[in-house]
Image 1 (spheres, rainbow, N blue to C red):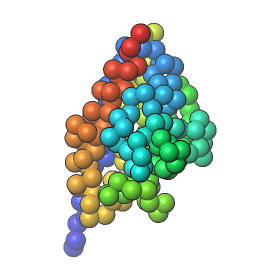
Image 2 (cartoon, rainbow, N blue to C red):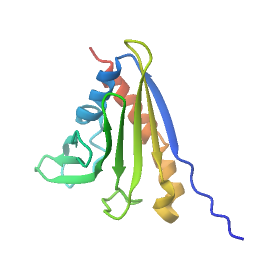
Image 3 (spheres, helix red, strand yellow):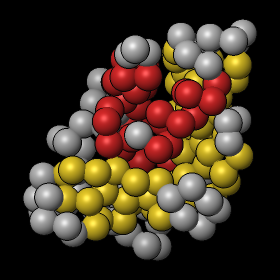
Image 4 (cartoon, rainbow, N blue to C red):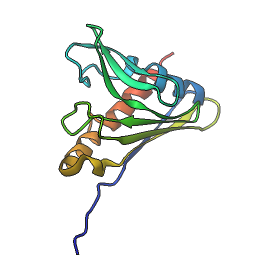
Length: 158
């Protein structure tokens, strides 16, 4: 009997000292302000990161040359509580329309001026043989833990 061990979903959280609506807005509508340009798949410097605010909306980056590079799309749009994004970047960090992993972000109010932001990146087994390496990268400093800290730092600026 062959047992297939799937990589566990990546789960991380951070508490930000802002209200729930602001946390949701900064994460979804101002991603270009905190997402590092080094995390780009385009040919030129990234100048924008866009999540179109609706189910079926695109998630993409725009380079300084105007080229748009698709990352995925919106699977669930429930402001200010939750967004689920289809991540369609493969183990080589290029767009792959045949691959879908999911990034779910929940925004849980912790009073009026604090929000617990919970992120889960799931279906990592879909990366195939590269699944463990991709999970390691996503869980490293350049992955979701570092990204959540960048997000929190920007969200909490006056």
